[in-house]
Image 1 (cartoon, rainbow, N blue to C red):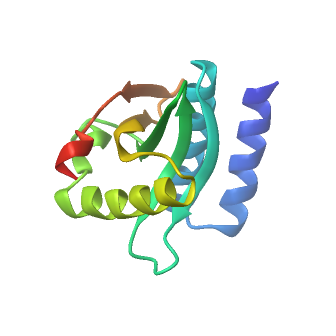
Image 2 (image 1 turned 45 degrees about the vertical axis):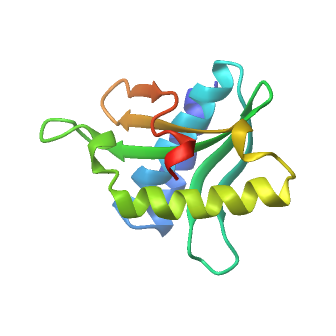
Length: 139
Protein backbone atom coordinates (compact mmCIF):
# COMPACT_ATOMS: atom_id res chain seq x y z
CA UNK A 1 0.00 0.00 0.00
CA UNK A 2 2.79 2.46 0.87
CA UNK A 3 4.58 1.71 -2.38
CA UNK A 4 1.44 2.60 -4.35
CA UNK A 5 1.15 5.87 -2.41
CA UNK A 6 4.80 6.65 -3.20
CA UNK A 7 4.22 5.99 -6.91
CA UNK A 8 1.12 8.23 -6.98
CA UNK A 9 2.98 11.01 -5.17
CA UNK A 10 5.86 10.73 -7.64
CA UNK A 11 3.46 10.82 -10.62
CA UNK A 12 1.79 13.96 -9.22
CA UNK A 13 5.18 15.65 -8.75
CA UNK A 14 6.11 14.85 -12.35
CA UNK A 15 3.05 16.84 -13.43
CA UNK A 16 4.23 20.03 -11.69
CA UNK A 17 8.03 19.72 -11.32
CA UNK A 18 11.06 19.12 -13.45
CA UNK A 19 11.91 15.40 -13.68
CA UNK A 20 15.16 15.86 -11.73
CA UNK A 21 13.35 17.67 -8.90
CA UNK A 22 10.63 14.99 -8.79
CA UNK A 23 13.30 12.26 -8.67
CA UNK A 24 15.07 14.04 -5.79
CA UNK A 25 11.83 14.29 -3.83
CA UNK A 26 11.14 10.60 -4.49
CA UNK A 27 14.61 9.80 -3.18
CA UNK A 28 13.87 11.78 0.00
CA UNK A 29 10.56 9.91 0.40
CA UNK A 30 12.35 6.56 0.09
CA UNK A 31 15.12 7.64 2.50
CA UNK A 32 12.52 8.87 5.00
CA UNK A 33 10.65 5.56 4.90
CA UNK A 34 13.93 3.59 5.04
CA UNK A 35 15.14 5.40 8.18
CA UNK A 36 11.80 5.13 9.95
CA UNK A 37 11.77 1.42 9.10
CA UNK A 38 15.00 1.14 11.07
CA UNK A 39 13.60 2.84 14.14
CA UNK A 40 14.60 6.44 13.52
CA UNK A 41 12.04 9.24 13.92
CA UNK A 42 12.19 11.85 11.14
CA UNK A 43 11.19 15.24 12.57
CA UNK A 44 12.03 17.64 9.71
CA UNK A 45 12.54 17.64 5.97
CA UNK A 46 14.47 20.20 3.95
CA UNK A 47 15.42 22.27 6.99
CA UNK A 48 16.97 25.59 5.98
CA UNK A 49 18.53 28.38 7.98
CA UNK A 50 16.61 31.66 7.91
CA UNK A 51 19.40 33.24 5.88
CA UNK A 52 19.36 30.38 3.39
CA UNK A 53 23.03 29.69 4.03
CA UNK A 54 22.52 26.02 4.91
CA UNK A 55 20.17 23.10 4.34
CA UNK A 56 19.66 19.57 5.65
CA UNK A 57 17.51 17.08 3.72
CA UNK A 58 16.23 15.11 6.73
CA UNK A 59 16.52 15.63 10.48
CA UNK A 60 15.83 12.57 12.62
CA UNK A 61 16.22 11.18 16.11
CA UNK A 62 18.09 7.91 16.57
CA UNK A 63 17.54 7.28 20.26
CA UNK A 64 18.96 10.37 21.97
CA UNK A 65 21.12 11.36 18.97
CA UNK A 66 19.98 14.08 16.59
CA UNK A 67 20.85 12.95 13.07
CA UNK A 68 21.35 15.27 10.11
CA UNK A 69 20.86 13.31 6.90
CA UNK A 70 22.02 14.19 3.41
CA UNK A 71 20.07 12.28 0.76
CA UNK A 72 21.71 11.70 -2.59
CA UNK A 73 19.59 10.26 -5.37
CA UNK A 74 20.39 9.15 -8.91
CA UNK A 75 18.55 7.19 -11.56
CA UNK A 76 21.60 4.95 -11.98
CA UNK A 77 24.98 4.43 -10.33
CA UNK A 78 26.75 3.37 -13.53
CA UNK A 79 28.93 6.49 -13.70
CA UNK A 80 29.34 7.10 -9.97
CA UNK A 81 27.56 6.32 -6.74
CA UNK A 82 25.23 9.11 -5.58
CA UNK A 83 27.05 9.65 -2.28
CA UNK A 84 30.26 10.54 -4.14
CA UNK A 85 28.71 13.89 -5.07
CA UNK A 86 29.01 15.40 -1.58
CA UNK A 87 31.67 18.09 -1.72
CA UNK A 88 33.27 20.13 1.09
CA UNK A 89 30.98 23.12 0.39
CA UNK A 90 27.88 20.92 0.79
CA UNK A 91 29.25 19.63 4.10
CA UNK A 92 29.86 23.23 5.31
CA UNK A 93 26.31 24.28 4.36
CA UNK A 94 24.90 21.21 6.07
CA UNK A 95 26.91 21.90 9.22
CA UNK A 96 25.65 25.50 9.26
CA UNK A 97 22.03 24.31 9.15
CA UNK A 98 22.75 21.55 11.69
CA UNK A 99 24.22 24.00 14.20
CA UNK A 100 21.21 26.26 13.74
CA UNK A 101 18.74 23.40 14.23
CA UNK A 102 20.60 21.98 17.24
CA UNK A 103 20.76 25.42 18.87
CA UNK A 104 17.04 26.03 18.33
CA UNK A 105 16.19 22.55 19.66
CA UNK A 106 18.59 22.94 22.64
CA UNK A 107 20.54 19.84 21.64
CA UNK A 108 24.24 19.76 22.62
CA UNK A 109 26.58 19.51 19.63
CA UNK A 110 28.08 16.27 20.96
CA UNK A 111 24.66 14.59 20.45
CA UNK A 112 24.58 15.43 16.71
CA UNK A 113 25.55 12.95 14.00
CA UNK A 114 25.79 13.27 10.20
CA UNK A 115 24.53 10.42 8.02
CA UNK A 116 24.19 9.94 4.28
CA UNK A 117 21.46 7.99 2.54
CA UNK A 118 22.11 7.06 -1.06
CA UNK A 119 19.17 6.16 -3.31
CA UNK A 120 19.42 4.63 -6.78
CA UNK A 121 16.06 4.71 -8.52
CA UNK A 122 16.40 1.26 -10.08
CA UNK A 123 13.52 -1.20 -10.04
CA UNK A 124 13.33 -1.87 -7.16
CA UNK A 125 15.10 1.19 -5.71
CA UNK A 126 18.39 0.58 -3.90
CA UNK A 127 18.83 2.46 -0.60
CA UNK A 128 22.12 2.53 1.33
CA UNK A 129 22.75 4.21 4.68
CA UNK A 130 26.08 5.49 6.03
CA UNK A 131 26.04 6.34 9.73
CA UNK A 132 28.56 8.92 10.91
CA UNK A 133 29.45 9.80 7.31
CA UNK A 134 31.54 12.77 8.46
CA UNK A 135 32.69 13.47 12.01
CA UNK A 136 30.93 16.29 13.84
CA UNK A 137 34.15 17.46 15.49
CA UNK A 138 35.61 18.58 12.14
CA UNK A 139 32.58 20.69 11.20
